[in-house]
Picture (cartoon, rainbow, N blue to C red):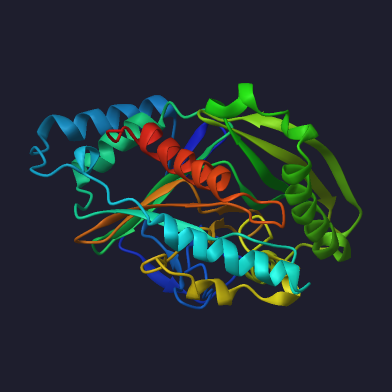
Amino acid sequence: MRHGDQWVLIEGPFHPSSDANRDEITVFFPDFYDLGSSPALVGAKTYRLSTEELRKNCEAFLVHAPPTEAPVRKASWEEPLKEHFANALKITQDRIAKGEIQKSVPAVFARSRQTVTAPERAQMLLRLLEAPSTLYVYGLWQNGEGVLGATPEVLFDYSKGYLKTMALAGTCPKSEASSRESLLQDEKEMQEHLYVLEDLMSVLHPWGEVKTEGPKIVELPTLYHLKTDIEIRCKTKPEFFSLIKQLHPTPALGVAPRSAGYKWMAEFPGQEGRRGFGGPFAFIGKEEALCLVAIRNLQWNRNTSMIGSGCGVVAASELEREWRELYQKRLSVRKILGLDV
């Protein structure tokens, strides 16, 4: 994981940890729909490297690495079916019309029959060294499965008594920026953003006074997002695993209001193998913790790879516009990882 100007690398073997807030860094990456699906993990050794040190390590590894016969960077991708997303959009908007919910975030997945090899991970890491500071680079792999990506979204960041998070919702692909009004004047995107902001302020209020800054437009390599920064000076230090359960998922990836539940979205077509996409990806220490939202990533197992994307559906959502946004989000992953587009 990249944190500031340092890269934190944890070497296996990994073993489950039942202790919260321990001295060693604990990694927690469960399934989106089941926070109990995977234990927190502790590795054998932790390294903190500069960008240049990590670059030299990757380059040295690649000098002796055998070539990959079927590289995922040149893979052909089976794109998600538009009719599957149209079905999810209709179900969501029907529930909105009935007053059951205000918003949900369906996800779709492009899939490849090629997996990710160790040399390819090194090559992708070299690309990710150049990722802008607005993105958090993260990854975890073991036993033939893994994830690697660069997310713009933080579930929470706790350090020295301060809890920081963000409402990140409302999107405009750069390719459409000249033909659309500013996100700050876009009624649909602002409404989607406010659902997330209001939810977070409500959930976090018991921890202390909630201060916000925004909304503002943040620029990513291929997208613009609406973002409001949130900060609380906590009355007491959180128990980090409990905080994850309280916050996940925000309406940026789940459903507004929370009381409507979110696991019903698992019944949307095309959800096979979602695993941790959109879930928490946490690095937890005794006194500090950083929990990311696991989006903008490549996931793989021994036989296949997949890239997911999600979009917020509200009453005013339009199929074609949301379908283009979903594609642009997947395209951003392929570009930043150096996959053929």
